[in-house]
Length: 257
Image (tube, rainbow, N blue to C red):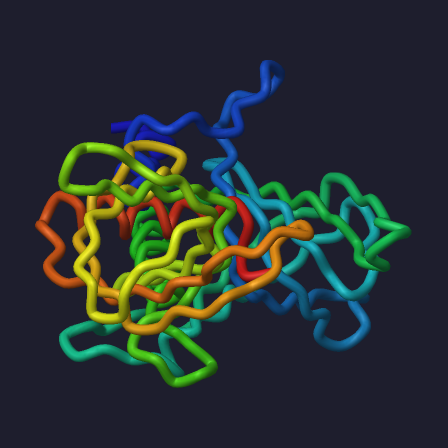
């Protein structure tokens, strides 16, 4: 199996459209991971993040500029060390050697974009990278600075609440996790009311039963609405897998910014 196919399957991308440009021979997969960079002539340790990766290299956003042609060592930093789960044994760091092939300064964000050419996909190194990325992207769903069991993500998706007669009311999701949802609608629901909701993610739609735990009146675009917090009741294996995949895909595309 080609490495680009392996990374797509291993990271749960399925058949989702990837960022494949016509003049590229390798698919770039969005993937935000903290990095540090060292090398001869590099001033100390330069910190930043990887924003995407392919079989032949990676794109970095760094705090300092790096000259084109410079050979560097990129160390990918896993957050698994701080969020270690039972049964897992992740690599805490992964080092990759490469060459800077292009550089661009972003004047608005004051960061430095760097393209690094590296033989990422070859042999054992390719397997190590797949394992590292898989564990790193999975932990990002579980880390939560507010000490909840699952991390809440702000996603730009809609939600449908389905009534027993088949009618629906549509709302906007404020945030979403593997155990609950916060959304806004024009309709109000009772606390402890059981809802049948459909999360309208990028693909596919996800059907989830939920119970209302909190509701409050809010002002949305000069109109009164209702903000509802729901706790998921019983996720089926397929819907849980679909929700996990959708949230991971969102993280890879947009990160936690």
